[in-house]
Every structure is written in C-alpha cells, then in structure tokens.
Length: 95
Image: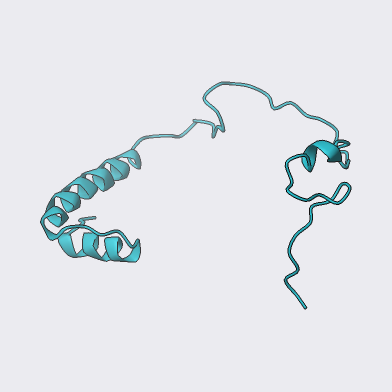
C-alpha cells in the first residue's frame, strides 16, 4: 500500500489536524514506511504460537462475583460540594 500526499491531506482533514503543505510529502514517506513495516509483520510465520494477553505466563486471580454497595458511602460523597446524606445533589435539568 502506498500512501501519497493526497491521502495524508485527507486523513489530516478527517482527523481535524492542521498539517502544513510543506510537511505532506515527508509525512507521506514516514507513514508509508510504517505501513510497509506493519505489512512485513504479516509475513512472520506464527503457526504454533499461542495467542497471549501478557508477556508473562500468569493466571488471573479469581474472586466471587458478589454485588455490594461498597459499604463506604460517606467516603464516596466526602468531596461532594453539597451532599444530602449518602447522595450527590445535582442541578435540576427537567422542569
């Protein structure tokens, strides 16, 4: 895949990024090199390689899935500007 000046300008426009005209060619070359490197990764033989979620071999800790209220509502609303008991007060938005 070749990334040209027009593609860089279009992507910059869609991303709402202001790119100077004199930078379009150099950005196109840089992005083209990045895409070529990513395409190279597709050529790597990964047969027999297990998918992994982490670089270290570890087992996730399990816990019981128990629904609680947290038990510390007073700490939750401690920094609220105007708490009412264990609740936040917010401005009325519907009349």
